[in-house]
Image (spheres, helix red, strand yellow):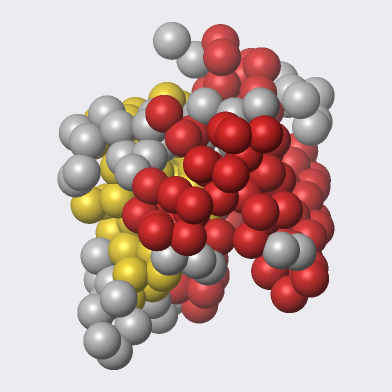
Length: 193
């Protein structure tokens, strides 16, 4: 059951089986059904979540109860409210399963223990956080400089299978446009093909 996760971890760092076994000993395995909420905005602390299989959506609900999609997480991705996780503050986001999903979660103590006992995990998470920062910076640039069509085309390129899984309103929210405008972009692109 864990070979796929071991292979994924080793993409970044040459873990031993014992180190990864400790991850499974400290982590918690949980299954969620489609539309189940893993973390609710205001929950005391968000765990750090490794998605073994499935899709999660992280969103922020504003004062008018409008949901702004922050990110989607797919197979072998990490997600969570990092500020809540690291600083022990209530979660600012809601994390919802967009399909039946299997995850491994770490609480802060398990995370710190893994990093302290195994320098490989310290390096692994540093690489993940670096990659995440780069990804978020690229998204900011896309949001401030790309046209809506360019944002959509980049989304499709980066997440080729997600359109089949996620409702259009969530994709539109992620892109910062209305569902109606996204429909118009899709029609325009279909007519070009």
